[in-house]
Picture 1 (spheres, rainbow, N blue to C red):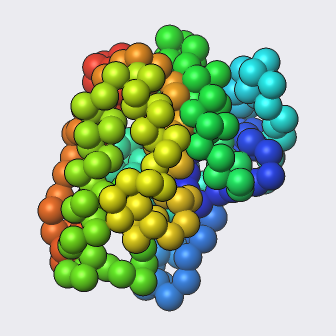
Picture 2: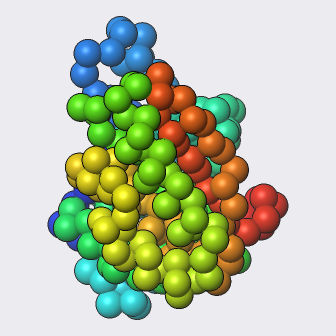
Picture 3: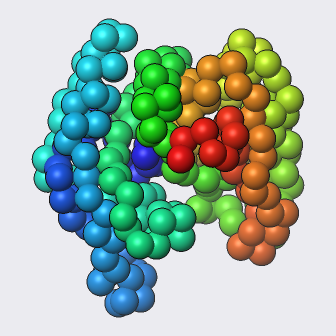
Length: 223
């Protein structure tokens, strides 16, 4: 998983065999600081991730102490509630370079044929200063553009659009910082020529926000 809540200078891979928890939020109810998601890590796949990225020319590091942040455990507790699937995180690169993250995804594409599901965890609209009804217009404009870019374009055209995402309608209103968008680019890079499919959409999330999620390939391709 590539979470919008972990960024480093270089792509960094979670290498622990038994990752802990990282409660990377504040002001939430007390019980949210006692959530446990006890999925095992996978040092072997972590090493494979580093090999693929370094072969593509990227500098990488490993982290043996990083725990699961909420960009990982919040969706996975729904997808895999038994926590019986090995999980590891890959950080974003803190420069948010779209080209680098697309290229990283492309480098990791072989993992999909090795039984590894690649998940970009973020949010298609992430402006915490403008949520609810006031976010309706900018979120809908950006969501419409993003859906067309991901699902309505062939691979090279799609990549070009996403490389220039900041020119999209309401782009910087939707993403003042692109930490929650860039994980999608890693998934797009890994998808290569496969078309995108919008598998989740809401028009009034949190009172008025348009949000979407996308999948590449068939649902059983990575299972």
